Length: 385
Image 1 (cartoon, one colour):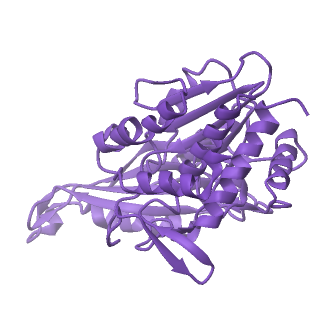
Image 2 (image 1 turned 135 degrees about the vertical axis):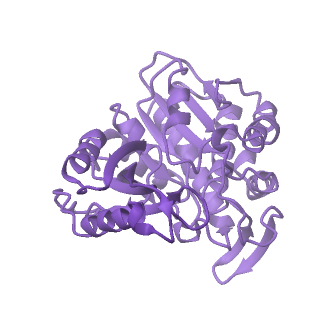
């Protein structure tokens, strides 16, 4: 199992970390993100003799194995990482010793890039053994930090066969993320009237109106019961901006961005509409709303066929019974479940290190998850069992 060896997996991970692909204002269009896919990751697939193509967003799509068998699994990887921020030497991959064993340090190892290295190892092994009897689909998307489903939606419009199940390759401490809340972002725009700040009575200060909105929403009853695993829904202000940006001026506009988390079964549009219908602001202010990106919630049945295959993959990889947990963050699993495709989030990397100034991943976790991915390919698209 050369592709699943420690040395091969670590080499791939070092290669990924050393190629910066940070989130920027260009989001999925960033040349560094697209370059990571084409110049860093794709040559590894070339070495495996894999056949792949790119869609209009620059996402890489690989499909292997016979189509039309009714057995297809899809893995989704991510090229974009959180910005380096305060992390020192973020793109100089280094092996370090920790109390729990050997680890590799670098930006993205806790979140996207270690899972991608494990995936490439599993795919390489599956292709080398030439034992696919179902469809294996791999998407390496330009997303990872954008908080929307645009990239995976672009991929799904171009794949030849709908998968039965999907794995979102992201750090989950090698546990299976079987559920997660979704999210809808929206802006509340408070309107006022400008004036010179020396005569504020001639204006209507939009900041004062925004204060009233925030106080109202602090005690806003969202009317959604708690989920037994995911807890309660939340409504959180995440950004605020006033305009015009001018000295000594009463602002006539304040834009507040909110993050409304969604429970499995909730409709994002209905959740947004309920808030917009109930929130008001008396004159002289005005109030308007703009809907932003959506990520859908997910919940996997532990009695369903996909979880049975996941359990078998962990067992065959020598890891025993898998650990499951509800995720606080959202990614693309909900996109698939909304379309009737069972999905989980699963990969090496510690969630507590996401976006931190210190990221490292245990090499043992990288090797273990590569084996799980490989065994899952065998159970979902490999020889009949």
